[in-house]
Length: 283
Image 1 (cartoon, one colour):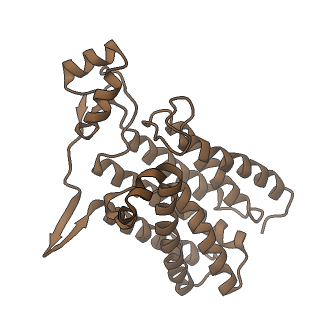
Image 2 (cartoon, rainbow, N blue to C red):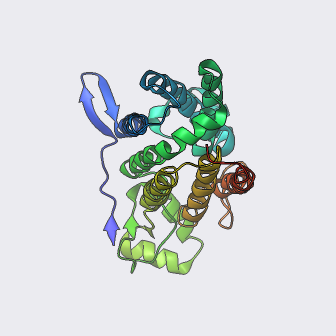
């Protein structure tokens, strides 16, 4: 049994300015995007110039932040944020929805494509393999913050972890079961899956490896994007079985979580697009 290290969410203080780990992970994600994108351009991909890649990142960053925050507000906690509207702007506290950020990025890519004369699928096929490493960085940020902890796990699981931040959830869940109450009394908390690290592995490393290898050969336009939809949707759907479910607009469910509801359309649309684009010749 492990105990979450309780990292200070502030990485460094620069005078009155507090630099949070969460923000640094976003910065790392954007840096990895640029680094791997420039590597692909040097390997002969002529979809964009280096200058255009920099510009598109700015569009995408705005889409991620605005879409991610609005997704959190609309999909997960509308009641809280509509009652505390100023909290919407406090992004350093965390609370970003991937699915909202994903929609924001799609809008940003479509707008940038019109600006530079590139099709939507040209751009999404190029950026799809670059996204998972940014997702991996974000999940590490979640782990450092001690947020989005997992469901209750057996103390016998070697990597089961106590999250002191989950104290209120521990007490609420323990009241529903005598076994959980005994665990709470014995260990001072409920041991949980470190689901942030599961998501880091599935949404980040595994998805990156699959997309990077698949996109290394000529593919029909749109198939790389379709594989991203399928891959992320499946990775998120699986990891949600180990993540403590968020309430969301449909209420809290231990059967199908809000994250799984939002991932199902990605899988279905991804499969449909993969079949549709499979009839085309490699670009």
